[in-house]
Length: 311
Ligand SMILES: [Zn+2]
Image: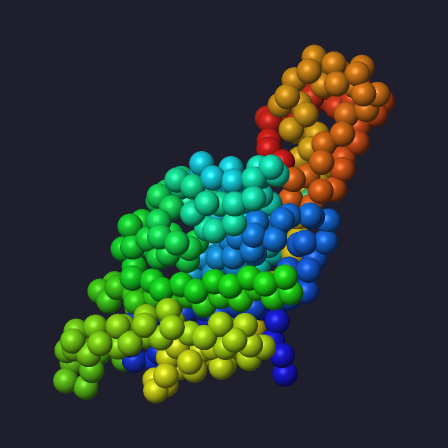
């Protein structure tokens, strides 16, 4: 059976290696439905959407993970966001007059920023690394290496119809993230961990991820992807966690955004245009405020907690 719009985790029972495989089809179509990105930007957007799912799947958290690319190339800003329950959205701001298409031409010099924000807003983490190499995947490997010191290999692919990706990590041993999940089986029979064997296994695994044929990565069988990258190892593949496209914009968030803009500014726009319309950059849904709604917006301003953003 074809697997789609889900992420599946996998791990080795007796080695500190784990990963995620992801495939999006209907959610990708939904994400693109109201957009009109040029093909190369659509590919980059798709890869970033996959990456945001893979990154979110490495975490235990309740909130949203935001992957942001900012650069000097054709794409000035690209944002992909995934929540802990795998609701995904993404948007890009780009130069419509440029025809640049390669990764470096698209992004130029710039940074990848990963922000993890808890729903209760009590905790927030942010890591920034420069864009490196010739792919978004290479920049993500750099991110894990620098920000988290976790050796990581990543593959991402995007076509018009399907997005797919795989991420594999070698976890730290002592007191590491995997401790409770794997426990004593991290160690070999003689009680010591053989670093050389682990190094070899990691080398083989990361080479297999990088060499994974595109058709297998895009194939509807996630087990086939996992088998190809973890060849010869007893790998445990966990169940499907569904992914869907869903924007998090809402009328009250737009209202808060307009209040943040200031009453005189909003009234100026109202006078000029007859209504104030804000279009969500992620889903392109328009939010229109007529004169009555603008009155209400500022009449109730004192009763509403401080300014918010559309995000
Ligand atoms: Zn929206």
